[in-house]
Length: 127
Image (cartoon, rainbow, N blue to C red):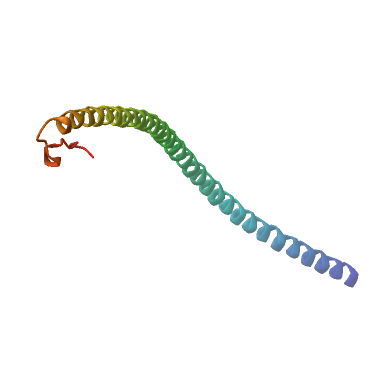
């Protein structure tokens, strides 16, 4: 009888320990489920924020591409303006040279006239 009481007591202790582990395991499982839900919620928020950031980045890239195209167009236009200015300067230099030739020829005629002084010589307007 004593043996059976010991066996019953040992069995009761084993059952009690198993019940403690069972209920503790259930509580831990509930905690884990709550943690998983929080992690899933945070993950969804991060995915949403990531999508927003990607969309913003794409918009910035499009703006940067547009700005680069505008800068290239401005550079092309600037090159064309520089070419026009260079051509104009060359034309003005040629005109100024012709005017200098005409003035020199006129001065020769004036200086060869009787009674001409050096003050009578024509001077170019643009040196």
